Length: 249
Image: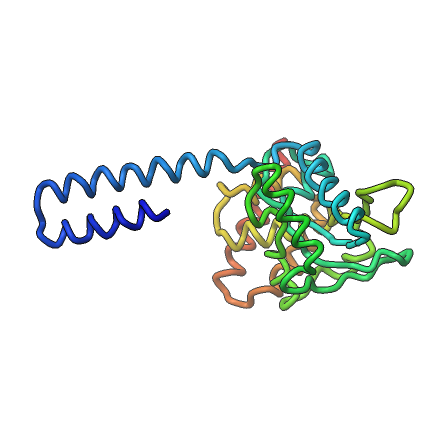
């Protein structure tokens, strides 16, 4: 880091005189930075499969159990799709939609705290380091949806799994997978929001194979997220396109 700073200062001073040597040095330096960034990106691993995600979550659970802690979180996005067996693809993170109290038969969802509780954050950071994952491989990005509202009845449809010591279910990590039905809502919204059928969200939506009734219900909810005429037009086009694609399969 210190070398890079000194090099930058040198190049900045050299560029001020606009010499050919300075320009050549700047070009070499820029190319070196590009190479370094590529190496860093390659060193960061993705969660490539259901087994890979399970391993990462199990390690978080083990650390929490060792610390005498327990948390329950509901997840959606690519990780939920993979763990439910709907798609088979890599994902870079586990999107947390909600925290929950899992000590009741029907856990209530609540908005994730910001920042995460220290024991959970520490466990996530440790697993990120040990498995070479993104620093924020578990994050509450989708929590913004709480401000606009969640699909009605979503909590009752979440499918819970326990990670951690089987003999100590009160410790570790409970993961709630947002149901296929609700994932249709979120993926339709994401597809319309990105305004393209080339996005991973559109591919995921097709993989969910929503019925006509599910699409109509999802579209009704998505329409409430943005009242602009332009958004509504894109929504209608996406629903029509999805219906057409599914009929052909």
